[in-house]
Length: 244
Image (spheres, rainbow, N blue to C red):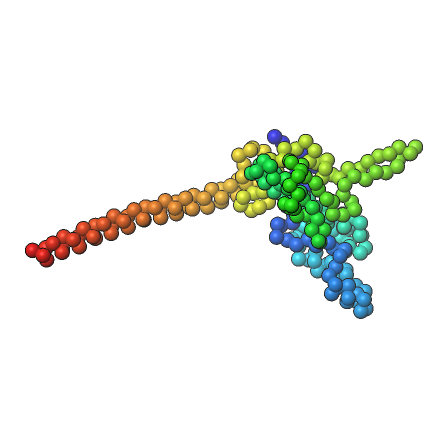
């Protein structure tokens, strides 16, 4: 099965941010930054935002800033904010979906509900066990979800979150996390466990070494037992000879 273009793009965007990379709300700076601003450093927030972006991988940084000519947050706020949160939410939503489906398939009865934690990002809440195979997504910024607008002649139009559009009718089991590099990928074949041939080869080699190591340990144990048995028989023969 071929992935739709919108979902393929969202997966690509989600993979711009490594799994371990922290992506806090850039419009909720730490108290220390706010205090510095109150004490007279009017550029404190912008400096913190720029420093934060400076730590990110170049492809991620380029994507976030490319929509506004490389302007920092405070001079091209909307577009930079939108791109930042697209990456943040694509990564969190896709990973939460992978976890949800994996847990659901493991138990067939344990519902998992992505929800907010204290900082606004997604996490898996295991407390709600009354939802069967359904789950809720809570959007973490104002540009997500469904937006209604009044068009010409008072006609109502709705703009739906691209993430919802991308996932409609998609097989959840094909959205996976690579067992080697942990990147998100679309499994064109259901037996795929890695995002690329390279990762699959590395994983096979690793598994082969583990299996060989196990076999070698078994073989070593057998050889050691045989060696100890021979040594015991030899010592018994020597003892019998001395007795004679």
